Image 1 (cartoon, rainbow, N blue to C red):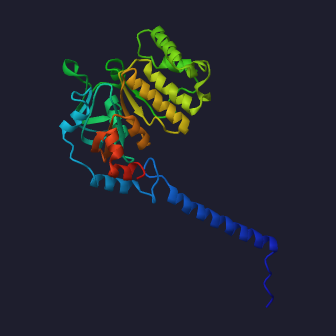
Image 2: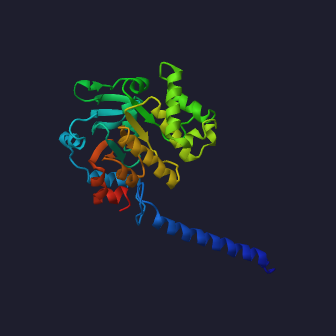
Image 3: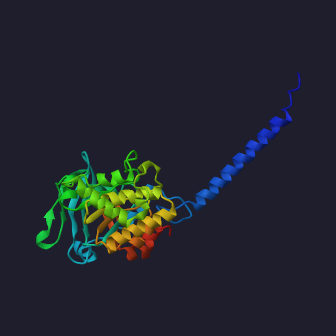
Length: 317
């Protein structure tokens, strides 16, 4: 029998090189797994699945009486959600949920994916199906039921603005035209243009790009434009969905500084959903942990930051 041909040296080298590369990739993957972020922010020694987070969060859920929520809202709430069950189509996501936020306060909603955080914002603004419960805005004699108002009615009549996640600008329009679109519900176009000029006075970064198409803006500039566009209607309440998504750290800081000024200098009430739990709790007056469409934990932002159980699940220990 003829001897089998020996592989060429070049083939042997390629095989060794491939093995070395594969070994390197495996080693890197193991290293990455150890350094992987915990849920939303921080680092932990192992990866936690959404199912594990849900299970562990349910285990630390507290009984939260309405009186506790009202106390956190400094007594009389400006935004109230009472026994709300809501979702999409026939699917229920929120279950008998209660929420209270005082005027000029900020509330951050944290929790695993699918917990119902954005669904709360959608329910307040009128983007989904409400099966039961009520949503109110205002205090004392000015308190009114806004449960069944349309999004345009909530913006124009109740002063509630929704700042969507990234990529909600009109890329083919200029920065200026995008701002004008924010005032589409105003009686006269001139009113929107007047407010747009006030926005440019406030944010020179946008003013310098007023004639540029929105699609050429940086991620941070687009986020600034999205926030500014919502301000054209001069809302009292800002619903902010993932303000830091897709942004570099320097722009994340800029966005949170803008939101801080809007709350503390202009008196806006802010309800926010944010995956960066640590950053958002440092910013917010109040924090709710949501699990499976229910409020599992509620407290001040500082209380949640100091809660070791919340830290383990959402802040990287």
